[in-house]
Image (cartoon, rainbow over all chains, first blue to last red; front, side):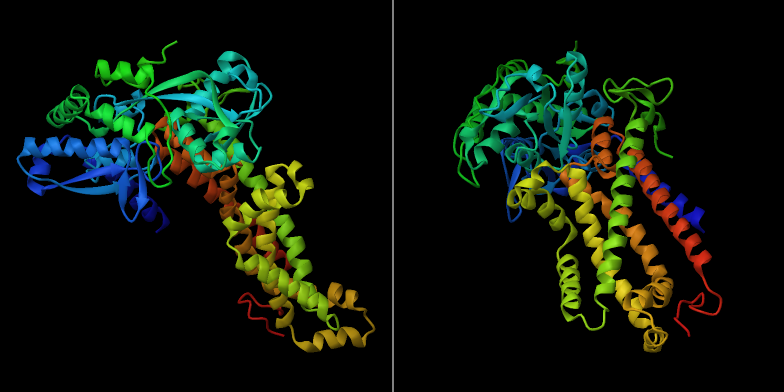
Length: 298
Length: 253
């Protein structure tokens, strides 16, 4: 009896792989008249205002992509916002629950085995945030210190890699989410918080006294952030890519960047204040879907 | 059965190369399997230390609540149970970790492990105290009177008459409680103790092998809880007195 249950459970898990067949998303959108957009609850690029409202740089960009898809399919698609997490976003894109995920997903080799990515729209730089009076100015100063980072992010691995290559030794603590990691830094349980620059900037801007914190040191890793789509669907990828290239070319994406990173944004009406990085500018100048490994080869 | 990749456990946690010995050389060069076993160690440590605290404090408070002629100790015991049983565990963990050290500066130096073990231990102690109390009150009142009649002090009557029977009565729920503390130990993740729950989230993200990591972590949780269950059941069998508290646990006399 117990064995049967086990086999059934395993079969149920295995069955999720069955949906991962190549399919034609454009045709699916045409017949259903509905597109499911993957969004995030609290990322710097896509977040919720509550009541099922999702906003952010990437979310608004995705809405414009849908506008362009409307022209391509000749139909006005209804948008369903599907909140996803780091853990479920890839399976949800694979099994068709989500058609287009524009959150804060890093394009890397491991993920390219399961899904495809549109051209890179944001280059994330992993940086160090610390208290302004800590005296920490770079990764070298972290020797013997306690460093916070967030569970379930690529920064954890970046941190370990830097620790090994630079021969320094520090204690890692992993917060359960970004707010928790920032609390570790704020409460003095950690001396530094290593994370995506946009997340650091957003957390500092929302803190009680933003002047007490600063982002310091070298860029530890650059990560191309891109919209995620199903694998082996060239027609849909071309449609999405073309829309993004159009938005870059006519300057509307730059306007969106200014709106979400340089102007006060909801819900607290504070500025993140993160000017566009050279890496992002380079990605826009030559739209590409290169994975993270292509940028950090040593 | 889908494309399962169990080799992922042998990969190095930094460069993702498959390690020949599947374990790594220690220090920073370790495999995911090595990391998972370390995380298991944290889970077991948090649970076992928490369980010891819970059993000791829970027994003390449980006894306190049944003491004759000590109304203030009874009230203190009642307050303890109500306090720790009515606040959600996760909230308690946060209180221990973030709030108490702010109010009591001496606690700032406490390692997170100690704080989380206190939170988990005291939360479970309230539940165990309630079980100990019910075990004691399930005994016929005559036992207490008999103990007094032969000249036992309160301590002696608890030590030699009441508690040995009460513990036998409450052993089955104690087994559940010990298994629960293993499962509840996952909350330690919320305050950055690198337990299994945290390993799953991180390693699944890094390797893209969510399902494999999930299966591995689940297996370790099952092994831990089942081991505790078997050990406690064996103890229960050894302690059983024929004729009293029969296998059905109905508290016959």
